[in-house]
Length: 629
Image (tube, rainbow, N blue to C red; front, side):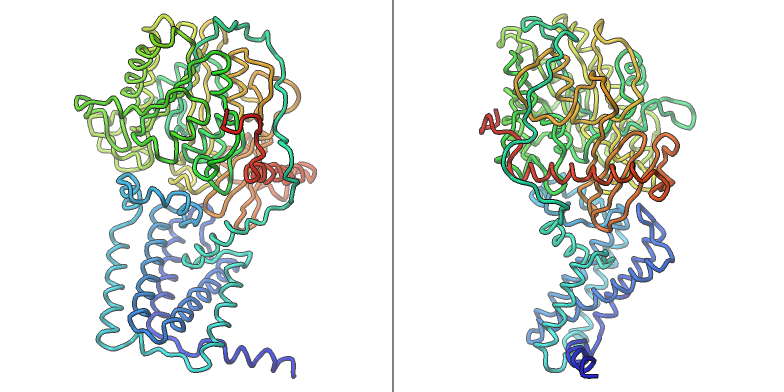
C-alpha cells in the first residue's frame, strides 16, 4: 500500500486537472487527419488494428501533454499563451497538410538538410505546391477562431492549472521526454518532429568501431589488357546523369501503345545495359557523391553540405592524373545549391559550369521550372567543349552532364512540349510527358556527338542521379518509400566497336560501381583508392550486396542480395524481405519465410552501412591528399 501511495501521490499532483478549447482543437485535428490519412494510405497505411488503436491513443496523449506544457509555461502571460497555441496549430496543420498531399510525414532530417534553401524561389514553389488550399484555408479559419474565442470569451487564458504548478510542469516534461524517446512513433506530428530530432542526435548505431586508420584505402586490382588504351589514345568519356529517371519506364508504353522512352530503348540495343541498377539513395547530391566517390551515402547528412572537411580522392582526380581534362556542367542554374560547386572542385573537376551561364533570351522557350531542357544543356555543353578543346590541345575529356528538366512535380512542362498526354492532369501523365521529352533529346545528344570526329571513339554512359516513384505503390515523393521504384535507375554504356550489345540481368549493381568501371574502361590501374564499388566488368564469384539508403521518413536501410531485398525501418524496427524475381511488385513480405542463414546475413549487412557512416563521421575515408586530391 505504501508503494502504491508513493506512486499515486505524484501522479495525482502531476497529471493535468483541467482541459479546455485547445485540447479539443488539437485532439479533433489529430483524429481528422488520422481518418484522412487512412484513405490515402502509403507505405504504412492506417488500418483498424490494435497497433493503430494504440497509435491513436499514444498520439492523443502526446499532443495533450504538449498543450499542458504550453499552458503551464505561459501561465502568467496571455499573449505568450495565444502565440504558443497559434504556433502549435500552425505546425500541426502544415505538417498534416503536407503529409496528406505528399503521403510523406514531415521529417526532421529532411527539414534540416534543406532549410538553407527554404527562401529560394524554387524551394518556395515546391513547399507551396505541397499543400492543398482547403487545408490552408481550414488552418487560417481555426487560428482566427482561437483569437476570437480568446478576445471575446477568454476561452484560452482562463484555463489555469491548480498548484503545485512546478510539480505539474516537471512531471509533464518527464512524461513528454519519455514519449519522444519511446521506440514507437507518434502520429502527433509535433511530437514526431521531436522524435526525429532525438533520433538524429542519438541514432543508436548497433556497434562501435575503432576510429584509427583508413579501412577503405587499398591498392587497385591490375586488370589492364581488358581495354588496351594507351595514355595518348585514351577515349573521351561522357557521363550523362539524367534527372529522376525511373527505370520502370524503360520500354514502357502508354495505354495506346506509344513508347515513353523510344530513343533510350533503341540505344540500349546497341550497348551494354544493366537491368538491375540502383541509385544508392535519393536526391541529386547523394547520387553524385556515390558515383564520384564510390562510397555508400550517409544516412544522417548530405556529404556535399555536411562534410566540408572530408578527405577523399574522387574519380575526376584519378582521370586528371592520367591526362584527362575534367569538366562538369549542370543544367540547374545555381551551382551553390547543395554546395555543388565546392564539392566538384574538391572532387577534381578542372572546369565547373552551369548551362545557365550561357543561355540567352532567345532560349527562353526552352527553359522552365528548375532550368533549361536537356537538349539545350547538350547544345551548350558541346559548343563550350569545342572552344575548350582548342585551349587544352586536344586532351581526352571526362565530362559529367547533369540534366534538370525532368524534375519533381513534372507539371511545369509547356503545353507545346506535352507529346504523349496533352492537357495532362495526373502525376503519371505529367511524368510520362516530361521523361518522353528528355528521352527525345537524347537523340540531340547522340547527334551532337556524331558531328564531332574527335568523339568517334568516345565512351557514352547514360544513367540517372536518382529515381522517382510515380504512384507504383501510391507514393509520388522520393522522400518516402523503400520500394524499387524509389531507387532503380537505368545504366547504359555505349562504346562503338569496343563493347558488344548485351543485357545483364543476373546481379544487382549500383552507383558506387560507376567510378571503378570508368577507370577500368580507361585502362587506369595501379595506385590506391578508397572505392567500395567494383568494376562492372569483373566477373568473379557471387553477386556483391547492394546497399540503399532512404534517409527520411524514419530512415530505411536496405541490402540487396539479388534476388532478395531486405529492408529495415530505423523508426519502427520493422523488417521486410522481398524476392525481386518472383515478386517484382514487392507485395509479399517474406521475413518469416526465407532461410534463417540468409536473413542473418542480410541483417548483418546493415553493419556495413553503420560502419560506412562511422568512416564518414571520423573522416577516415582517404588520407593521402588532405585537400581532396
